[in-house]
Amino acid sequence: MWSDARLIAAKDLRIEMVSRVLTTQVLPFGLLVLIVFGFAISPDRQVVGGGRGDQTRAVLEQIAPGLFWLAVLFSTLLAIGHSFAVEAADGNLDALRMAGLDPAGIFIGKAAAVLAQLLVLELVLGVGALVFYGAPLANPVLLLLTMIVATIGIATAGILHAALAAGLRVRDTLVPLLLLPVLAPVLLGATLATEAALFGPASDGWPWFYGLAAFAVLYVGAGILAFGSLLEET
Amino acid sequence: MMAVSLEVVSDPVVVLEGAVSLLGNFPALAGLDFSVTSGEIVLLQGPNGAGKSTLLRLCAGLAPLRDGKGEVLGMSLATTQGRRDVRRQVGLLGHQTALYDDLTVEQNVRFWTAAGRGDLAMINPALDRLGLAQRLRTVPVGGLSAGQRKRTALAVLLCRRPKLWLLDEPHAGLDRLGRDLVDELVAQAVDSGATAIVASHELDRVAGLATRVVNLAGGHAPAGRTGRVGGAPDQAGHGAE
Image 1 (tube, each protein chain N blue to C red):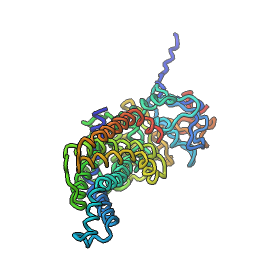
Image 2: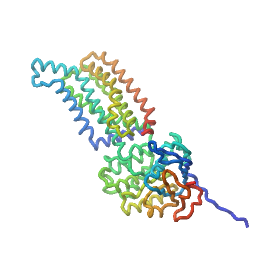
Image 3: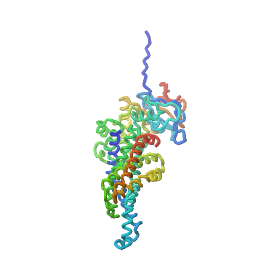
Image 4: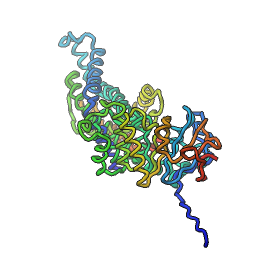
């Protein structure tokens, strides 16, 4: 399983390094989401420094964790879509089945490649959020662990649901419909844990962190068990 | 003096009895009886929609067997595990080449060879043989012509060394040299102990290569529509019944 996972992850990351979908599409999209949300919240930012501007900045600072995770979630849809688009093209999914790879290995490999890309994305978006929204950072350890665990959950759930829709012609529109409701608990937990990491106290964030860890474990397990059957049905 | 009858008994590679396979709700194979023994090169003929590609996908363990009996290389097509086991032993070259556009020719061949537990030492000889060893080796597959893509897919097949070659219109998109090369590769694979089933509309070319011809129509192999190449009746006791 692990050697198959390494093979798939290395292949997906190599494709990403050549196609640069993360750097030319996903990252700019995520940054745009952050900026556009900023504009939507504060249509009169030119008065920052005055009374209304200060209020707006305070609001942005408060909702920065939620906006950050929303941007991550929307960007995830692009990353997941690309991860399966390369398999849907030219019969590659059939060829993966023909190769006799362990389905659990394919699942872990694809999820690991998406995880690596999303962590890079979050790093850039995180800096972007701190700059655009001026949020403080009280507990970096909690923030880092939250990002890792939440992203494991997002990547594994994303790959699993993308596989569910892989054989359908409407997969591009179906995946967001399937995925966003499933990831709503991750959005909530990650936002509250990040809020605690930014503003403190950290003790408020750990219960959410454990919830995110449980979600990640659940989806890693579900993927290992179910991915083979989903691959058969595509 | 007692007469001695020497009969070569070949192992069955494909055995289908009353095989039904659906494309959606449509029975692409509707109760097909079909068998292939070791060392044969079987040419599948038939009009568009006759079920040739579905038969190849069924033999590859990709299309499910909805009814009837089916075995490939002694493994059942009726179970998921059986189909997974079949896939490791067979190679399918279909209308799609199953290559990643962003990876180079060599990266594609290396990935699929490793994924299929093929022989990594075969990569360089295979690229050489298919005329991909020089400049094309480092070219991303997305920049190749259809014929070059097919050559790359054939290189993958060579490295995987399957026991059963399933080729769907293998000459399509290739120039004359490429077509000759396909014929050579199939003949050599069979000489080395493999078996091949080839679906093709290019009868003039494949008829010279095939040891038997099976005609398909409407998901069946109608009685009397199978025979040895050259028109002789099929004496092997397999094929349509």
